[in-house]
Image (tube, rainbow, N blue to C red; front, side, top):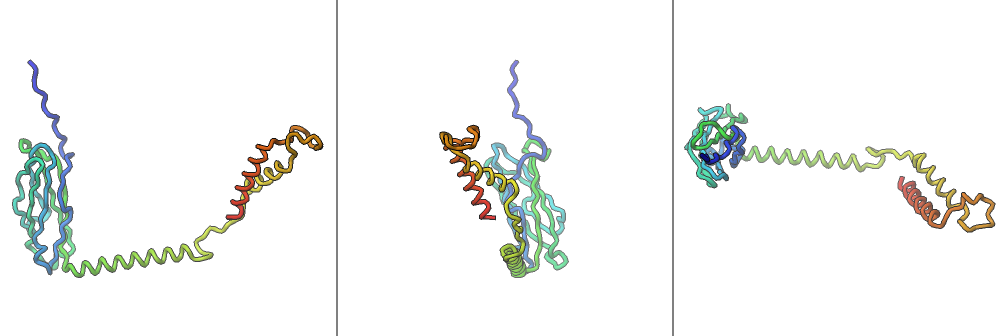
Length: 214
């Protein structure tokens, strides 16, 4: 009896989880940021169950911390910060979203989202601006040092011995007689064709340009 083939089981923990944003920033002086929204996307052809976990659950309220997402749909998860105190400034907490098939218990995929409480949005903008200025100054100083004459530059030691040797050989080749010159006293095997002399002249020109650039 022929049995219908089942769809291959997904490997636990390997399913990509799509969440936006991947970082939550709460500002103590801005109450509108005390509530953040995570959007969980399901691009697959099957429904997903999800569950939201947190490293410090006493600091947050997660609305609908568990639920389901239909195939090719998304769901919004509301997270509220309920412990806005100065002792928590700069502390990074983590949320973990676990997803699984509705008929399975094992987690097919996980995604972590970091959350940070900062004292003020204005102070954060100021720090970012100062950081950009420092990076700009560092880059400017680097380019100034790079292009200053006599500094950070490799001192040229002139043409190499191989270049000089090739140049001498090319000059000697050009001084040799051409094939067909019967009046020359140079042995016949040292007579060069016109094409050979053209190649020697071309190479000599390249060597001359290389020497001038150094």
